[in-house]
Image 1: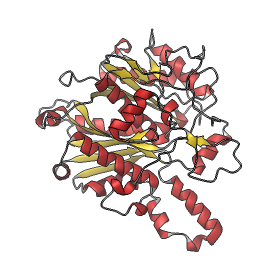
Image 2: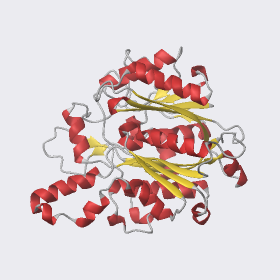
Image 3: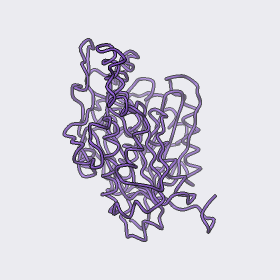
Image 4: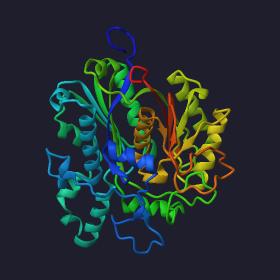
Length: 410
């Protein structure tokens, strides 16, 4: 059902909140994208003894007390701290008075892969050392996955709100943004905070390491010599609202959400399926009212593993007669799991607003089996009208988001 005039609303992005290994907030993140900054460094979140290599993309210089006012930061897990901080940033970036926000119908939708698995690691350690009867109650309380969204609700004092935490793994950020788009478009809510958050944890690192997909030093998407992912962390939260709402308050518009597509093929637990991803892209284009030829660049899932990059490139060539420039910001920020596609969406919105394509760094020679223009190592000026953000996840959960330049903003 749509609102009273029976027309779907246009949905725009007016605020961005970013917690990443290449910077906090719009200004630092944008500067990192332009410069092709790397967030890679040795992991410090857990003891890496026994691993032959253990680089990752951790968030540094992050003080949760700077962003969280209504709770003691130690009451929240690290992923929730990221989520709440990014939401607070997004509200401030959008220029919305928090008191005004409290009086509006809202949605909070946060995607995640691991939720507070970092705290579950702590609990496992405590159980070994102290026994189950001595487990820390504080750690038990903050390990609940739902706190990634409910923590935002509490921090902002929202009352007329639907709060979702979406666990569709590495595509969860796009899923969350899509759910918010649907709610605003139908008139169910006035404003939404949507994106994803995750924190580096031993469980996920060890799992990818056992799969043989952790790169020794750096992530090199689409490169002939790529060796795998670097696990990362952070949060990306987008403040989304109807075009009417943005116009009424004279808001700056980064981009318009044109549509999205979802497929879940369940073809394989970890291996992506080319045909399913191609269907997802075509579905996103149809829902956004565009053709493949309209897309000016693609923010790829681009993990840097052998299988993902060849499969994704093949799906792109299946949909596009001439593939547009296709980049992976994971070369800079690592694979931040549930936050990954949310950060990709934020990068796309900034690319549209600022007129550039971010680079794929650490690039030496493009794999001929990929055969894409991956904008190697240096950002490229570009006048962008339509951009596409790909997200793939285990078990064939694919989510493709399409953003466009809103002409009034231009």
